[in-house]
Length: 220
Image (cartoon, rainbow, N blue to C red; front, side, top):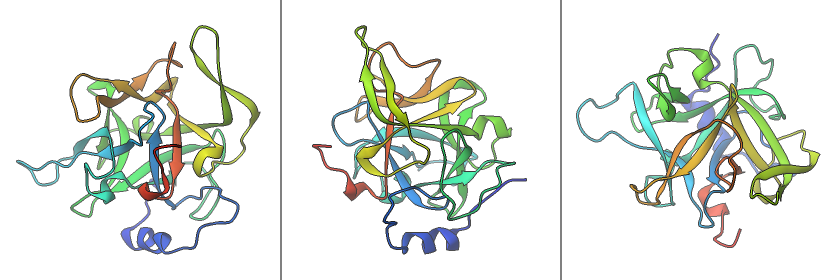
């Protein structure tokens, strides 16, 4: 059975006071900052401005603040099917989640791998299968750089997902990682995609989570 958070629940969550312990809860509105760039860039939905008003699948991208309306950057963690969690519970290491967004027409969408192109990541209204929109949480308090350039998790494992600079996040579908990859086209030169493994170099599969775009500074 699908777990879905409604628009009214989402609006209520926005008004809540920040949690002192800085852990991320199911239902919290969040933004996902890519660590692939030193500049603040975020996972965003791309609106479809021509043709069908609300297509079943929309593209995603990595965009700087202001490129898209603020609502197009705001996502929510939802328990995947079979996970016995509810709104307000903490998101834990290795849990399976779905990542939900409300689009510009009021429909909820899930972050999902394009079934026609496994390297493409979409925002879909009704994913064709649960597995393409189910992500496993991996998180680390710090990272280490190997001599060859690969970036690996380091230190004690983080049990709960946390806001800000105290934690790095990876999102895994099967054995593949949600990533930001270099692209010659686009405003930032970075696009969403999937990586088969931790890349040989760079921070493309690592993310940080914030409550809002304004919480991120260029120096972070």
